[in-house]
Length: 187
Image (cartoon, rainbow, N blue to C red; front, side):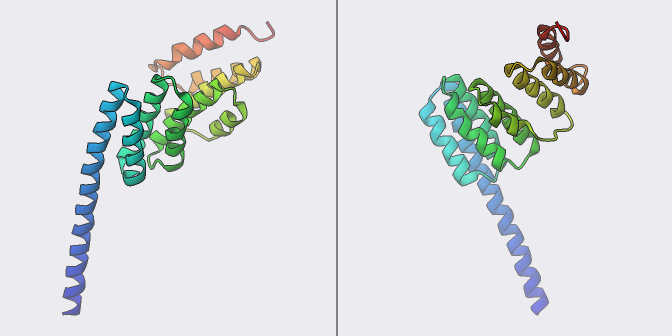
């Protein structure tokens, strides 16, 4: 009887946990849709509210990490890049998916670069990125080095980006333009 009771409780617990996760996901999806609509309407107050709800109540769902990127884009589009840093920092610290974490790091590094906070950008980019993000990190490092007037190091970073980027990557042309703009070494 004890074994049957333990098994029954385990099954009930497992189903209860599944129900809870499904409910959380459904609620998060509704708030995420509100966030997307607010971002499209450029309603920054509603963006802030929906993003806050997603981070606080549903941050462990996939919608939390997606919300960080949507909210940051909305803030940048509204001309408030300082506000965009908060959701990106949240995603760097809390995103469960490496894709979102890398995307947030790269976007945050771009904002720091615009603010001329080169040390913080450099710390943010000091990760060993592999796969499809390796080229993007190398490109962003090249941007950082070029902004610091380190042309030779920037060229090396841009070359590394070209080697890492897929042949059909739309970023390749931009990286090549940046490399060409730096001119030949010693020029």
